Amino acid sequence: MVDTLWHLILMSGFALVAPIALGALSDHLAGERLRKAAIGVAYGLAVAAVMSSPLSSSGGPAIAAHGPLLLVAGLFGGPLGALAALALPFAMVTAAGGAAMPAALASVVVPAGIGVAVHEVHRYTKRPLQRSSVISLAGLAPLCLLCLLVPTRGELPPTSLPALLAWLPLGTMVFGLLTLAELARSDALRAQIAEEAAETTMRMMSHAVFRQHLEHHWLLHERYGSPYAYLLVSIDEGANLRNRLGERRWQDVRHHVGRDVRKAVRDSDVCTAIDFDRFAVLLPHCSAVAARTVAERIRANVARSFGGGRHGEAVSVSIGIADVGRTSRPDDLETAAEGALFLANAQTPRSAIGATTKPGGDGPRNDAAPPATRAPAVARPCAIDGDFAGASRPQPLADENPSALETIATTLGEAPPRRPDRR
Image (cartoon, rainbow, N blue to C red):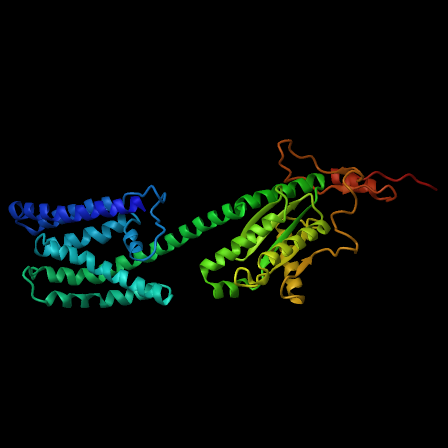
């Protein structure tokens, strides 16, 4: 914010002093319109250079701001935007009727004022600002010249009016499009800042780091058969709850749920926020039966935090559980948890827990035998540096299976041995 205010002060001081100096120089030395236009372009380029200089506070042209400051920040969108918004009107005014500071300032202030007013109206009515709104405003912009018909002491040169009449629609279009672009950049920056703050508050990792952990544990499972489970935690009726509470209160609810999820798991478990109302939890070295215990602990933590309307709303979560058994890709685990959550919510709309394997039945698919008692496995050779992408899934041997030798030979790419004749 300090850098933004410094840029505005610097630009405003330059905009007030430079026209006076250039106007005096133009009146004494320049007698042709071409020369005056050159002075206007020089002034516009200088102001464009000041306004398009980068802001170190935001690390780029995007500024996280609301209201009229957002429109001013739109001029920092790059040299081309600043050039179109400043250099052209000054050049047109000086070419038409001399370096008249009121006309030059009107050519910039009027379109900016239109943009500010429309942006504030759309923000108050909660309607999105679209390109169609900018085009319609550009058509109505010349009506602002009616205020110039009021007699004043310092009347504008008559030759400046055609230049203003030509610039006002174009200037309104430029300022409107810059506002739309800056709105998109600011929204993206605010979302990124809010997500980073939420991850820090809830002690969660970013989604990119979570994906790396998911792929890493998949490779460990491919090589060593290491089990792991995946939990998909979803806030019940999250969209309706968000609309009912508003963005600020919804973020507080989301942070409380995220902290409850983090408290229910181990420090070695990996958690991330994957959507506005969902969290993902990766449980290394954990079966589906043990993951269900963790899911019940998460559900109990959330019920305890929001019990009795402590935060103004009754909030609950539903959880889908999936283990790594019978999956062929890392993404299959997420799909399985999504399906388990969907089936659980179909039976119980709130506080449901669904799993891909039923406790008490045949058991988890991945825990058929403990790792210490499993028979040896055979896999294709793989690189020593940890690249297991080319390794096949380990094949357990069966002593009483007459085709075990044929399976091993097929895996190694050799011809299967012939069985001895027992006749």
